[in-house]
Image 1 (cartoon, one colour):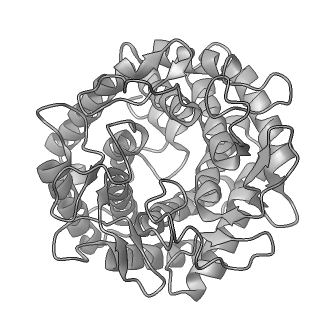
Image 2 (image 1 turned 45 degrees about the horizontal axis):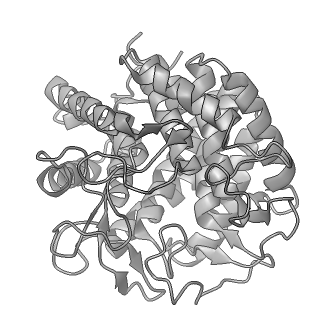
Length: 418
């Protein structure tokens, strides 16, 4: 049973307290869920174009399938019609055509056994999806969770380093000479969810170890600007992907949206430890505040127009000026988390400012969904992200303000209306 909405610290005038704002969040969330339903294909889920139609020629995508499974499991468990069948379809797809029956683990798409790598980023989302589906009592979810955790723990977790390894060849040979903040960030989210669902505290301890290395060691040393790319000896790769600055998972430089995403994950990890262990490291809160401040300083309105931009270099100079939707969603979630944690009206101001920005520029009232990316003049753009493939970030930002910081997303949302 989750705690009720943690409102004691919220200012009386907070939007999060207002029933009208909460109704608006609910309506926006349902709208997003409905827009993405056509992404269901025979073997999983596929990316949608700007009009909400399957993108011609695109393959079913395993990361997208895992994210859709997670979202629709949570939404279905809250009583939204049409969502649990989609979650069941996701679980079936992940247990079937997307899984490598010979070597274990998951392909990036059906039949893509020769496309290169088994990725930690992907397996974190499969573990998250499976845990959410277990909470929603989706058929096959426990089998998926058992298999996902076996692979994720045995193949990817490095007990010596306290992080997840990045990728391998299909047969688990040829470990990549890389350690990445992005895959490990999403692993923190998944570890907390898995700890709630399984009751095994080792997953929460792993989330803490990851966070301590990437945030309390490396990011803190850089005034909470988050370095993303390292080799296996933990040497910072400052020029990594300099020739691919618009890469969608490992762009050159640093990503302010990730500073903000880490910020709220640290608060959720603090709350998880307090809830389950009775104590938490004080640095989790301190680092969360530092990450939010640096994220907004490095990302917001850097070129004269509102919005959190994509990337900056190591001097915090803008590199890619586009405004991805997920950066705004994570900034919203972080502002809401800090507001609930502190009651500081500064975070209320940011929360309102960010929702005003999303409402004015990102919500597409003509074609549906959110525009996935805007240019530096806040016009539609497709430099990094084409179409409207992603539901996960935007939808979670409509629900996260209403949830306690712990337990995890699926567990807390299941008890929200009870």
